[in-house]
Image 1 (tube, rainbow, N blue to C red):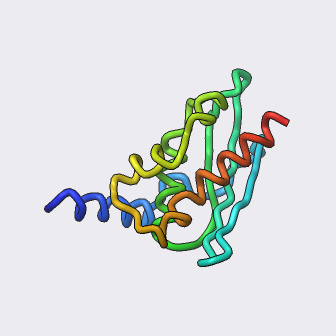
Image 2: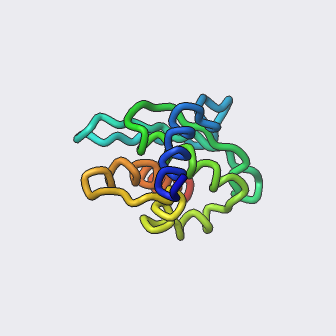
Length: 126
């Protein structure tokens, strides 16, 4: 199996069997974001501990395999991180997590959870 096929399998696995899909009980912060071009929707829910670290995160939503997998993979990587850590997340961080080349047409799908996360972090700081 070549590297691209392996990464495509990872994307499909996170899409079919997401580890972070569902609702949190009593989240500290909730933010919903959508991509009006294709209809992707993600709602990120997070719990923070007393040190402003993310103790748990879940999402609900619907959309293409890229947006939903990207959300699941991102949430795997934010648990235990501080709000300050998350400020440094960018497009390159998400693309590296996904491990596959994303076409310009699908880039907005892949970045949707990052937009949701960054907006949620802004709510925390407010």
